[in-house]
Image (cartoon, rainbow, N blue to C red; front, side, top):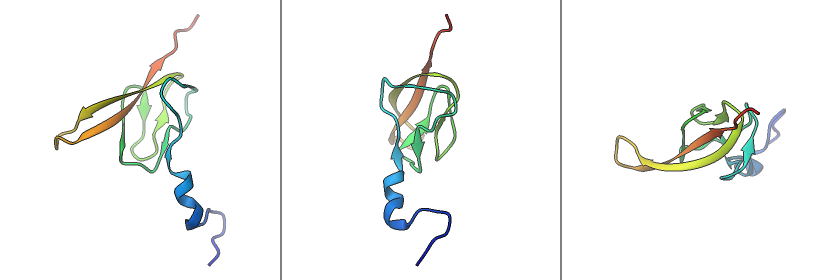
Length: 83
C-alpha cells in the first residue's frame, strides 16, 4: 500500500516523541514534542498534542499531579533575558 505525500506507518513511530532535552535552548515556534499524551504544556509552551515553544529560551521539565492524581511531565521554557 502506498501513501502519497506522507510517511509510511512503518516509520511513523520514529517521528513521534520528545524532540528536545532539558537544558537545551530553543527558538520561538520550534517543535518540542510530537503526538504525545505523556507531556503537558507548561510555562511559555503552546499546543495540546504537538507542543511548540512560544518564546525563545531554555527548556526544563517539571512533574506534577493532574486532577486524577496521575503524575504528568510538564514541558516549560525559561525565557532568555535580552541584553
